[in-house]
Length: 330
Ligand SMILES: Cc1cc2nc3c(=O)[nH]c(=O)nc-3n(C[C@H](O)[C@H](O)[C@H](O)COP(=O)(O)OP(=O)(O)OC[C@H]3O[C@@H](n4cnc5c(N)ncnc54)[C@H](O)[C@@H]3O)c2cc1C
Image 1 (cartoon, rainbow, N blue to C red):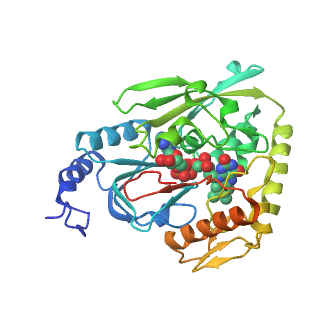
Image 2: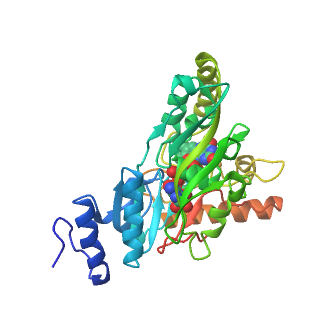
Image 3: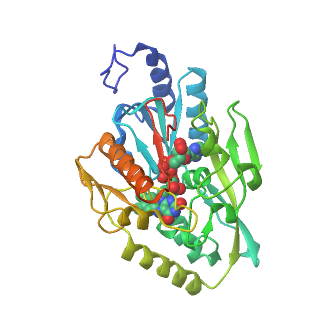
């Protein structure tokens, strides 16, 4: 029999006790066979066996622990802005992190430099705007990045010469053993759009969940911070497409730009099915509506092969390609 409120589309009885426990803990929030295309920036991704949005750190921790107790794999989803999830979706539990409290210092605590505690589901553009209003500088570069703090910490998100590594003092994580631990910034081994959490994903899953971050900010006039954010946002608007994408598909190779190379290889505007290399910026691959992850992967492969043949440069993905088991396969 199906648990109440959840259609039992699949004869997967192993999940049944876990789903029943989730319903006891979270009521009607968990959804069975939820299409992840509704939860990613590219509008791609097949169904999650079970999808659960969480609104607080307590809920996030409870969901992870329940899944561990039932031996159910967990995939952490932020805003889904840096992922290509396959058409088969993800088995097990996908947690969508909406724990987004930000602990601003009181006016009395704000000095020339000050710190901020941000939960991992906080979304960067609204966080950057709130910081600007509070006269806190350090996240202007993040105003146009449609991801969460958790995704930024895993990827070392950045733009315009800065990145999260520059602001992060330490982050609290849930370890694979279920312990809450604060790790200093050097623990993450940050490089260009990379951390050791991201690297480990392909090798059995990192198993670490980012809970919250402590960031270093400096005090600055509100108008100055706002003006800088406006410059960055304007630059973004004039150079990037506005449709369903994953942001930059490839990392820029040393001394060059992935977009320039793809364009020079004659691929700007190239289309497979409804997946297209953007005619606006060749490092953005767009779902024109109704694309599949297979189309998108084929486009990625054509871009990599053509650029390598023409220029001898192997383009490295900036996005993560996620398989059915929640593993990063590229
Ligand atoms: C239009 C557009 C523009 C973009 N511009 C930029 C840019 O300028 N610079 C840049 O760096 N990126 C950019 N991106 C990419 C993306 O926004 C960033 O990489 C962002 O940091 C991803 O965050 P997310 O919440 O969407 O993560 P997701 O894509 O949901 O997840 C990314 C990875 O982090 C993991 N993860 C997420 N949350 C947690 C958590 N709490 N604990 C453990 N693991 C977690 C996921 O499992 C996954 O492995 C852009 C994307 C788009 C669509």
